[in-house]
Amino acid sequence: MRILLVLDQFDGANNGNTNSARRLRDTLIRHGHEVRVAAQGESREGEKYGFPLYHLPVFDKLVTAQGFTFASRDRKTMQEAVEWADVVHVMMPFALSRSAVFEARRQGKPVTGAFHVQPENIWYSVHLGNCKPIIDFTYFGFRKYIFQYLHHIHCPSNMIRSQLEKHRYKADFRVISNGIEPDIVYHKNPKDPEFEGKILIVMSGRYSGEKRQDVLIDAVKKSKYKDRIVLYLAGQGPMKAHYEKLCADLPNKAVMKFLTKAELQRLFGMADLYVHTSDAEIEAMGCMEAFASGLVPVISNSTNRSATPQFALDERSLFKPGDSSDLAEKIDWWIEHEDERKRMEHLYAEEADRFRLDDCVDKMEQMFRDEIARVAAQG
Image (tube, rainbow, N blue to C red; front, side, top):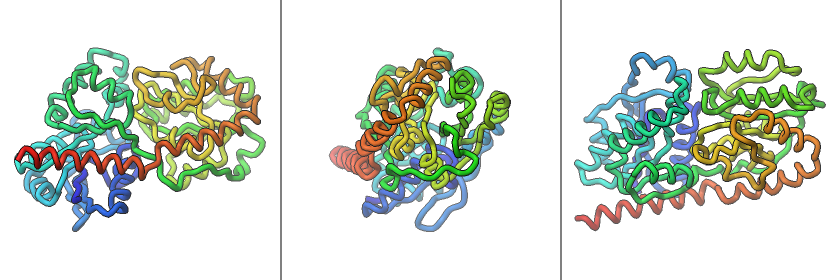
């Protein structure tokens, strides 16, 4: 198949959506398909159709701080991109993807979509992530703007599928994980000198409101072992300065830094425990990669807005959403039961095999074939 992936940002690897798209592209090519991308930036012959940068009035700095860029539309370039493809797959609910959907419909080409942007991801940045009317209206807006025109929609988790059904989306939903890469497996690394003799607790994710790193910071302060804990918050985002202030009185200096894939894997190999505090999450690749690497996770049990609780193998890996005291108790329990933690590390690493990237991409390919067949049957 000749597959066109459409998303605003593809170059660089500083957010989850871009990382997922790059993994999907690389795996599809490895599976024998031709893949090109339509995204913001310069065109690359036989690889990428480039579109101009779009500056969002008022919120441009906030968007950039989240590690994201928007693309402007260019009908001539999109027409060329869609003409090349056997199937078009849009991965964002914004203007570039809408233009691809309408161009595909105009040309009679198969087109599918993915629901990767949770409304909470947008509104938490301006402290409105818990405002139900705004969240519901955003689901409605996404549906009217783009998703009502798609027959097949990729949902990375059952949680987001349920949300789409609740908000009256009508489609053939395909629940398919974004997938864990085959080289991410159980491993242990010696700790760097700065972490020797310490308990290293890690969380990976953007520094933004819905991720709730503040809960983890507060939980470390309440832990019986706070004098031994070093907190490592891997990521970037607009709330970095705020979190640095919250970390200022921790007994051990916290580390806040954006890491490459290789650096993050090395960190997971040194760490003792992984914590995921997010209130809203479509899937949480950082958490998946952590337990695939052999880390026991402790996850916010935010079942209505986060898919991440599905990964917990039992209640010991769940804490009450937003409750730093409950989280501190769970952290302390895992610290005190090292033998059990080491046993569960292997079980979590085995659990990751259910979400391996190649199997997930096989399912994506089937969705593309089904859409191609549907369009062909319509004549």
